[in-house]
Length: 99
Image 1 (cartoon, rainbow, N blue to C red):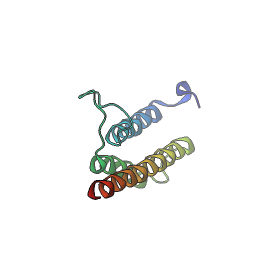
Image 2 (spheres, rainbow, N blue to C red):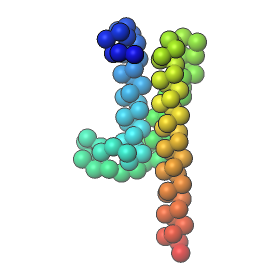
Image 3 (cartoon, one colour):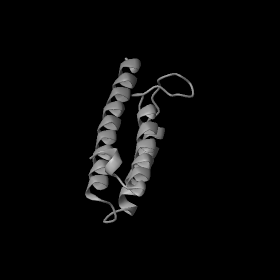
């Protein structure tokens, strides 16, 4: 779907989701933090942004267009998979450091 064909409210909703998504990507170390120009991982912060998106998903249930709903589902799923991956990496690093 083209951005031009989305209503103003749909565009604002997408912006909100993308804002939380970008913040989660930064916290997962997948994007450079524009404030520090560094890449670092903060699992707790990433979880917070994912939880915010899940809350939005819950509160907007049955009130989104199919496109909005699918985009939100995909965003949350993708972030959760990356969070699991980062958790595995950090667990592996702490095990290696103990050896």
